[in-house]
Figure 1 (cartoon, rainbow, N blue to C red):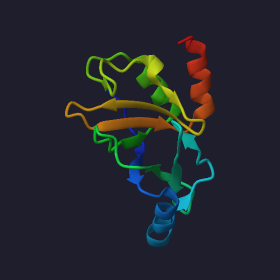
Figure 2 (cartoon, one colour):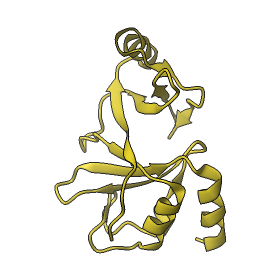
Figure 3 (cartoon, rainbow, N blue to C red):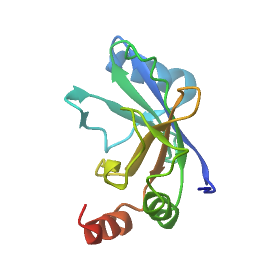
Figure 4 (cartoon, rainbow, N blue to C red):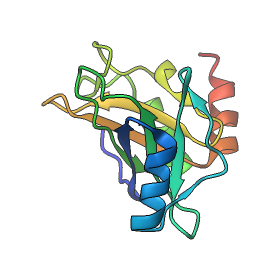
Length: 144
């Protein structure tokens, strides 16, 4: 299965104090806390964005997971996200939890949809789309 990504989307950063880190990224790189920041997986996380509002990093509290999570996320349009999902499972795409990535593994983040997977060397990858309603409609028709 092959898709074409639109752009590098964001990286995951692990810090001791998310608010202090957000201030540092603001002072040094001009990044701002995106208004859609929320609690992810029970932890307060901050979405960071450029001055134009483009999301580019998620700040997580704590140390990177023991599996060395350094996720690289690639942005795709909603139609490409759906096509990727409809091509699953694919013997070339391993899920992070083991086994093959499945259609049902899509994550709805409210702002975006994502699939998380690994490359053959174990690097954590993500494809994400901000065509949220389009993907929600597509996913809802699937009965997964």
